Length: 391
Image (cartoon, rainbow, N blue to C red; front, side, top):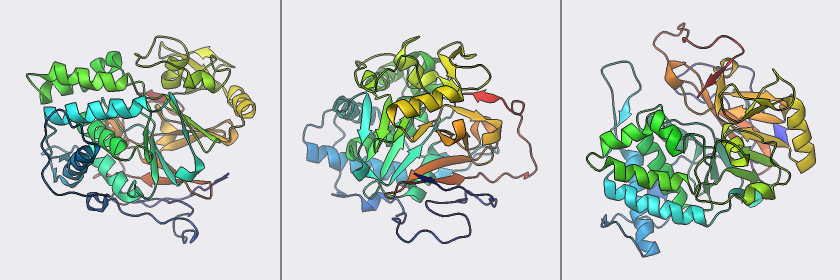
């Protein structure tokens, strides 16, 4: 496996710092597939006929037509600037019946997958995306840059909701894409895809506000989807992906496959660790996490895990360190584990974000997005150097 990195970046409005198989300023590898701009009009079996938004769509053809139209609506909606200096919002309305149709289809789709998704090498190239946290406008930009799911695959590592203000739109777009392209779009569960966490950090309130007076009912549909989501993925038998991290309870990868669903995120155990644990060399081996839940694990455990299971790379999300603000990623254990973060300017940290791209030639590279700031010299009010921001 080859990992391509860039040594320098140039600030620009959401510019791409470096792309698959290339370093900024150099030509891309001609043997790698080129990015095809994502366009809702390029979806297969496109139908521009109106589809009844009844709450039960039984015919798969009707469901695909409905999903095409729904994806088009979300992807083409205009953005509105806000009077303050916050990121513009996408002006689009998700209806209660949309939630019912898409969440029911999503549960049925997730039921067809095991808790450990095995993504075959034939699915490459694949884009691996970290935390999004309700940044819907930025999600659309990333999809537009990285390309149509007809031509490549996507693996999302969780934390679609909370913190940001358009978690409903983010989650609904990804669920619709996952239902429309079940063998091209894969979604994992993050620690925020849980009723307890999402009640605390904003998604519950967002549902109540946007769908009043039936917000509680709509919320229950989302929670049902949370409880069916897979927790980990194995890409081409060599790249192990999850939202959080490793667990002392893994003795075989089948242990992950055998996690029963539907389920909440438990307070301890294998599933808890997959969405909550973190790499940290402050303490040797396994140590109790300062989050108050799950563990931390050091570089030696990462190397032992990769050797035991013949894994080349572990890709996870879940954290943003200060040294990730520039580029959006960080390596651990001499390149065996990679943390990525895909929510730019998260909580006004003024951070870059990145997506990992794995080519058909098994080249791992990065697409980095940088928000333009009015005050280029501004320094975010962030944790001290060397610490991680708990998200």
